[in-house]
Image 1 (tube, rainbow, N blue to C red):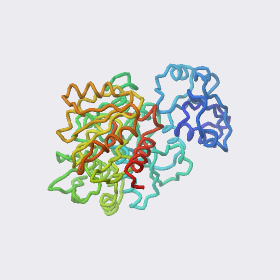
Image 2 (cartoon, rainbow, N blue to C red):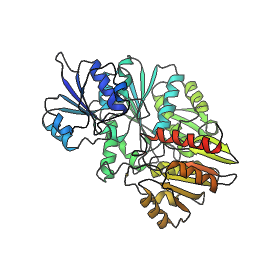
Image 3 (cartoon, rainbow, N blue to C red):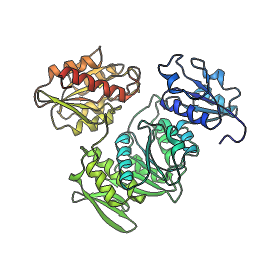
Image 4 (spheres, rainbow, N blue to C red):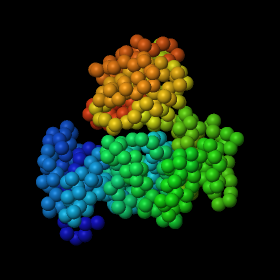
Length: 457
């Protein structure tokens, strides 16, 4: 990638993807400059041990773009940021971590995107390939950057990658052999200049480098996603809970059916899938299409569907105390994701919202309108409280409590409000940033507090 001459790379944003990018670049002969808006980042020195780099932390990146050959951006930094645009105008190549990782990877990419369900679907797809005896890496937005494992991959390996719009907007050569788009709902509008069209356009970049030898797996029941068939050269496979598309995966008589090239195959009864909720049934259909189109044996697909328990922080059972269930859905980072979590609840629910200081400018009204009498109380904290209150007022929902002290106060109050037979559900419908480093840290803190308060440890 960098030829015989040592070149200069600037990595902006020193979270997981930035750290992995810096290490990968150094191992491949680049002079690495690291940059972040923060001057002091706990643990960074230890994480970058073993490589040489120029420390430019706390410096305006606009001052660093002269004399560099490559700019690698953190997913949270828009490709249209002024310094990134100026760098591009000066002839600097501007990419993100998934593009960088892709260029140094030797395996075949199987990708999952969409607004909600990506992490569960990525993990489940990975299990299908593993049970099919493929040497499989599960990477990307799910928690392990592609750049972190790129040098370990070999020809014939499979890289199952969760990819988000924030990552896709900066790709160039990134190519998925099979790519699934699960759904499209409002998310990250603050990042995409309040434009759903720009958000969707970033998502659609997943398909732009595909060829006729590849597969695009699309949600037939989502009109926006269904229309993406016009954007790819790949073979289109649909998945549907409601219809029976010509080719793809669907349900008939409570059985998952795979239909391809004029032939049908019974996969599994829907009640044999372990993960709960209609949204997870949709995830299962998409994963089945990804796996079977990529020659994963049917038995491996069936085994994964029967055994996969779900992922941490996504409708994760924490404990039951005094007849009250506690569920961790910290992965619910937008209203539509939280709607799906609420729909999966079987008991009266106390819902914990917000718990972050990053405003995506989300509309919470559809969430309140989707309660259907199931949610008995809402506890809210963080920067999104005003928007949550406004939506509650519009929906006529009155049993809302603001918790200014954050998650510990919320869990304590929820315990007081809950009655035997209830569920306390953390599904914030908002990002964790500003209070936590990511939704995983938020979810772990929730579980810690629950165990402490309920004395279940």
